[in-house]
Image 1 (cartoon, rainbow, N blue to C red):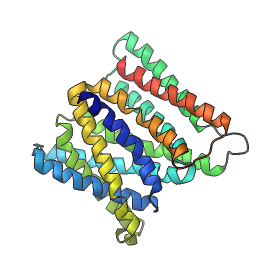
Image 2: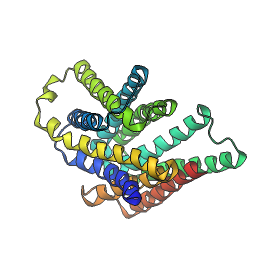
Image 3: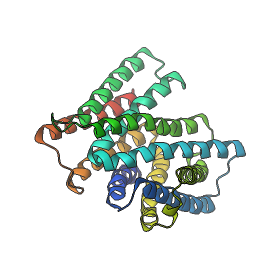
Length: 283
């Protein structure tokens, strides 16, 4: 059972981008469906588990969920611009680099000399891995890719805040799942309001995207349970295999084309990103 719990988050997070990319809709449809689907599952979990949470923790978790929307919307837009197989390793690498820096600067991680040495090595591997997966052959580079990469860097801040707020809280992962999903839905509705896109609430693609929320919920819940049963390090490291699944899946199932040179760089980049994740986590 422990092995299943370790693998399920990686599988679910790995197929999430593939599912979203297959849904015929705009990023706003996809993010709305994902948020509502997650809220639906979180309500069921709350009614079954009945976790307790303070008002302050509820509000902080909701704020974290709102920032998650920023990061996820950036990913969804990138799927359309540069494809899943390029978006996911870049986005994952950026998140790992940012999370490592936040852990050191805010939460006092890497206290020992050895931890600092291995941490720096891990970050260098992540940076090189992101650089390699972002590389395109000469002639294939275009302004859209550059703009998308800049957008990913900026929207990754949303993921970093989303991951950081719960680390400063004492409430359990399952307890903050509902307020996080409430924050997600509120953030999406605000985005729809300010961008004047009320029609997405009635569009078929928005409700088809509910399945993305269900898949995200499976990943999030099983990850929380895996952390409980297997420990943070083991659960986190195995979950990073999702980037391998989504990248390869993008090329196979979504027919995203890469030259032999680009494919080689992507595979090397994936190995470095996963290796960097393992080093920064374990050491």
